[in-house]
Image 1 (tube, rainbow, N blue to C red):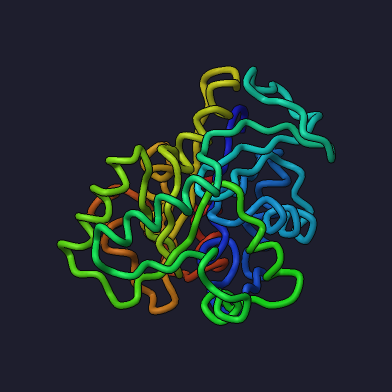
Image 2: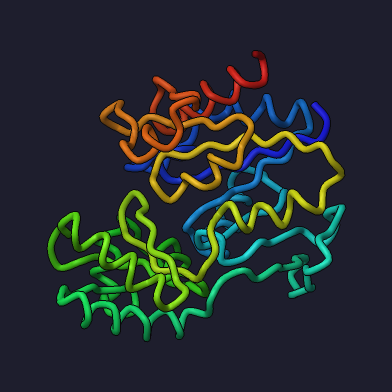
Length: 270
């Protein structure tokens, strides 16, 4: 298949949301490799986290970190977007996000105006982040190496009105709130889709887009795709936000990496 790009979320999609296993994804990954189709990791994870996963899975394609904070490209990638700059380590980068220090100031302001304590990674102890993220050791160090995205948790579940208010407060600062599998995320006026668009626009047309995800922060990248694939969650349901936003998507029966393989094979073989 010529000029095809696949964008995939990791946690709950390419890898299991609980134990981070990915063995069931192997048939889907093999099908992409055999067809020479790039697989772009598109995640809320940091650059070090994604580089670790790329090494583990043998991936050498571009990747998008921190919910669209930056697009990273191997220096040998062609065609290279004009906005990309060399950053060393064999990588080029296109920044589309807001620096972390600015996000942390904004989160404190939003928390005060909302009247609900919102605790970002910068407010949590290392042990607290480890408990909430289910990570430890080097993996935890990588998760804490944030540049463009401040994950946070409210002190209690937010009401519908509070969710609308927090989004309004973020927009007033030209920022965005998204909901991932484990955390809310405060980011700049970007998204996985906007970072992906930088890569897509550099490619010779036409480009066919396949995208996979399982959480609300995947909505825009799934809407961008010609073939959106919504992967089932551990309870074998699908996120209600995705069901409403993407009624024509392929909804997998398989969960996590099993759903990844199911979706990829159905699209490629269909």
